[in-house]
Length: 632
Image (tube, rainbow, N blue to C red; front, top):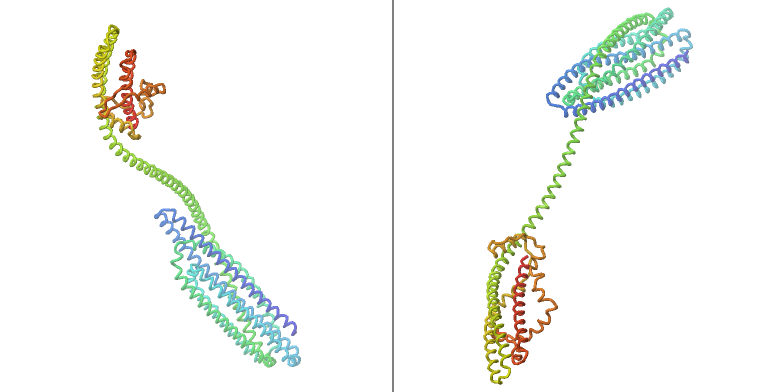
């Protein structure tokens, strides 16, 4: 019997441990669900913010109002469902406590049966059994303490998780009232149960009619076991319903956390959290008190183990009353479980209808979010294209600025060149005026030279006739002719002297014109110079590359005079001597006056004089050409 009793206690301890493990697993699942709901709420908030940023203000306000209404409805529904779940949890905990109490009572009854069958053996082995019982109970207490510590740690973790679920705890305010009412009910029931236990303790003192009531107690114990099995089934159903409600609550929390007013209600949620934590702390204190009570009961069992023989007679009547009370309590529990089941089914049906509406709202929000994302992509592409256009325009502006800078530099250089050209044009105008005067003078000189040449030719013909007629005359007559010829030559030389003096007067200006520095000017400056020089009679085409305009005497007779073939004539130039006054004398002509070949010498002299004059005129024109070329 003692072995059976020990095995039953071990089985009860195993069942308690399994239930504690199941409770811890449920707690971990709740923590995971809360974390997932937190993440889903943050994602929903982010999506709503993106959707709101892409829409207009009136549409946003309309959607916010609709979301607020939906949230209010869901909040009410969640509060009701959480109340139901909390009530189911409390009832499950109470059922577990009742099971433990029934197990203790069954163990006590078994002990009483064993002791009634063999009082002597019980008295002999009472001490050993009591010691074993005490050890087992102490082990149970240790296990319970460990389980309570685990539950306390789990409650601490839940408090941390509850801080994260600020919005969900806001809805627990209304549920707390209903839960408190139910807790008060259950506390009344527990007090009744406590009174029953006190009565059972008192009943142990009465051991008068134990044998007669044992059979009735067994039947009542069987009935209580059946009721316990039924309550367990009800608990299983309630736990399944609670899981379904928890799933629905997690879905609602995920949707509620997507609202924009979650941050405003966080403070209220923290206050509610503090209240909930206080309630949890009070519950934990109550659990500790119960543990202390159980420890006191164990100590009481140690003292009662010695007095079991005396208490068997008085326990029969008392146990009957306790069994009647337990039956009444079981009937009440059955009624409450059925009522809760019906309420849970109704809440499930109502929630399914609302869940479809929430799913439709979520789909619409997702469609709008996708449309907003597409619009954002299109706007981003347009912004990129605009940036590219701006960059291209900036590069073009930079290039244009560089071109303008170059043009300004060139314009400044052109202005400087124009100022220089104006100064030189003024000088050239003066030089051209002097050259024009010189050309006019030389033209007059050439005409006079032509007249003198004609007179000289006539004098030569006359001399030829005189020489042919008077070859036989004396030397005196020859001398007279020579003197006449010299007088005519002297007259010619006087005329030539005046020309050489004028040439000497203008010789400095001609050298300056020939040796004038050569510069390049623009076509506009050249046109202005030639217009000032010619008085507007001729126009310049501005073609600076025309070789005929650069050298206008190219291909004329003046090039022939400068050619290598005319070197002999330049070599004979040494016979011409210029006096200090600028007169030109020819020693060869003076030496050859008395020769018989005077006619040939005279022609040769005239030819030389003409050639010298033409050469000098060509030099003057060449200097003008060089000057014009330098202007170009």
